[in-house]
Amino acid sequence: MHQTNTKYFYPYISPFDPCPPIVRKSYSTPPQLYMGFQPPNLAQFQTAKEALYCGTLWPAFHDPYPPKEGREDN
Amino acid sequence: MWYYEKKLQYPVRVRECNPRLAKYLIEQYGGADGELSAALRYLNQRYTIPNKVVGLLNDIGTEEFAHLEMIATMVYKLTKDATPEQMKAAGLATHYANHDNALFYHNSAGNPWTATYIASKGDPIADIYEDIAAEEKARATYQWIINLSDDPELNDSLKFLREREIIHSQRFREAAQILIDEKDQKQFF
Image (tube, rainbow over all chains, first blue to last red; front, side, top):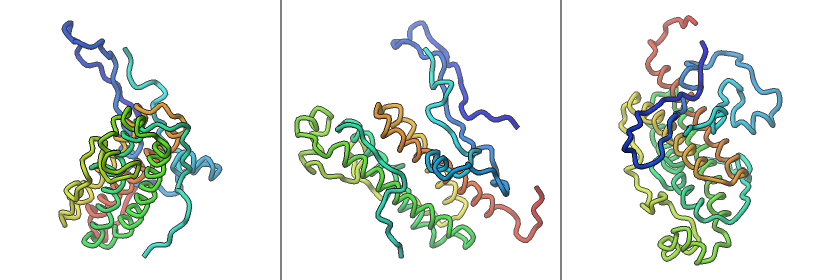
């Protein structure tokens, strides 16, 4: 199953909105929403340093923030 | 009982004195979805939860105290040598009037921590679902603080803490499933 960890949406923009509109907004949908029970022998990071840096032993759970594709667009 | 290891779970580096950022971060110290609430919530619920998930609540509750300590270190470093003028400029004059530069368990709006932030319903499903929600709320709070912060080294530690919330949520989701699944039935994957 292909999963994205950021979802984007486009709120209605009124011609009378007082602030300059943010056209594209986003919210997080991190990996734990899709995993179910963690499968046995899930691949781990090669080094302990990487794991510490990412905050998890398993790349499958790593969710970078802010998202690479950006949080919002004007 | 606990054994104390005299180091942080993840290093905390702060680039500059920035009391305004400390004001935002205190949300994770004494706020409703903060680390103190999390630690006390889980360590309290573990007495009345089914045996299978007691250990999980014990371990995560303990780790939350390690996170609390990291947040405390960040807040302390951000305000350590801030002058009363700097505290005032950061909107912390009311904090300074009461506490000088000391830390206190309140949220970023200055409301003191209260036990009403945590729940223990005694119903295992209700409690575990509450815990999942608490982890997602804490994750979101970290996102909003990262969005507000312009200190890259501090953000590095905050991203670590955000990832831990994801893992905790995963474990609570698994715990919920353990409580829901029919006992003694074969598991097919």
